[in-house]
Length: 42
Image (cartoon, rainbow, N blue to C red; front, side, top):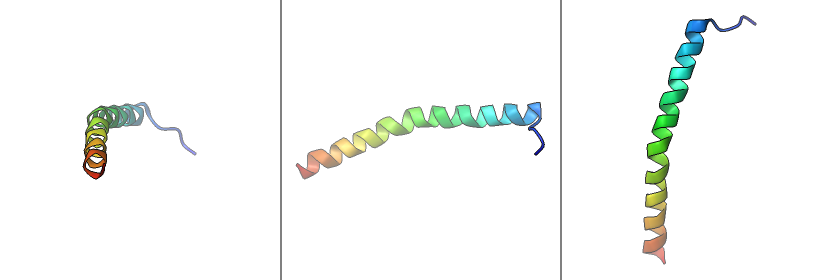
């Protein structure tokens, strides 16, 4: 198997970084929605 070139690694790191940044926003939103649902059911 051929190793990824340096340019591919830069692209992968950029994609991973944007994924992590998105996760930092998405997780609190999901937690807030889950808390709201638990509050409404209880």
